[in-house]
Image (cartoon, rainbow, N blue to C red; front, side):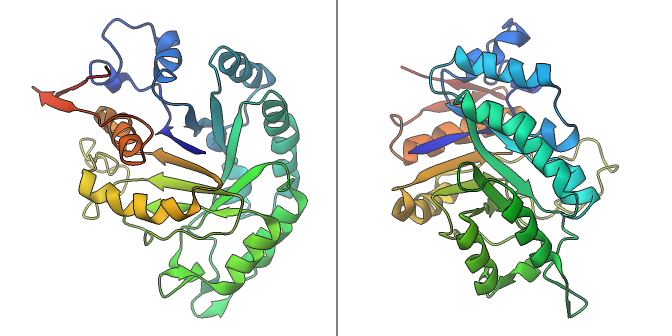
Length: 287
């Protein structure tokens, strides 16, 4: 099963680019679900969702046939405590993830590591691999699809995940999130029953600029070409026996939706998609 979508869906600048002008904001997910069957929720990284919010997601998915949400682990676990707050992760699993899984609307769970979570620091080995394994050992990785996004190159050796890291993920049946972007090399590791991919764009020149810089500079403002996505088709095809989830995070101007459609067509999930840009507007032809 191959599921392709975007990181988030309710962006105001998608109106006219992807969403029809005049579409009610509450109807955006319904429109989105006509084109994609999965999306990534990033808000759970910033704040623990209320029971009402979880029930709202479940209710929305119940009206959309076969739709699922992938969620980010809260930053209190990944960034604030650097993987030590296991109890908060367990609370997130029991109160948010399990109800959504039971309602058949949970996709995967992304554990996006802080760039300060490293295997080595100043040449010295850290205890972060042990922290990660301790966290994964407490989570229900047997029944939930977890993925880890590494954000520091010390986890790699020659551009590939280090053997000991890969072996640990295999033991826990946890995916190593594959990333297309300036910060990490584009590699796919076969460590779990599922694969998780995130597309951030190729704005290498502005990627590490401070967020409080030029407000007109957005490192995610990137539009992929077919030639840039074809290598990912070749990387993922050998793993098509399991579940593959791919999310485009280059959201400005609906680039993510446009590129997700293009990638679906490359993966044989929809007919070749024609797009044209007129006066900055991208029109989608869906017949």
